[in-house]
Image (cartoon, rainbow, N blue to C red; front, side, top):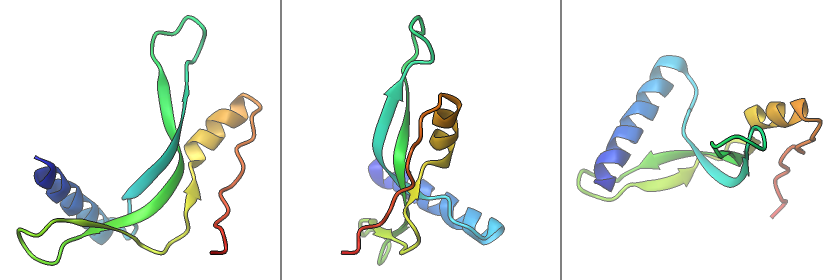
Amino acid sequence: MLQKRLFKIHGESKLFFEEQGYSILYLALGFLGWKESCNALEFRKAPLILVPVELERLSVGRPYRLKWTGDDVLTNISLRAKLTEQSVDLPEFEMPED
């Protein structure tokens, strides 16, 4: 089941990159959870940090490997905009030197 999902994700992200010219595959790290109001039933959550990654596999039947592309690690800009509406500042992610 996992291999089927990874195969689909790999194919879709590769096709999107070929058609649009940019990657859409990210590893999400750290989540912020909230409710829109005190009475809201739905609990929302969003990732804080997005790491650009790619899936690769050496040959058919081999497991997929997740690999950082080397591109900049990002703060979730959609979450930053949502928090700005609430007068909350989400700082930009800064990559450690090591």
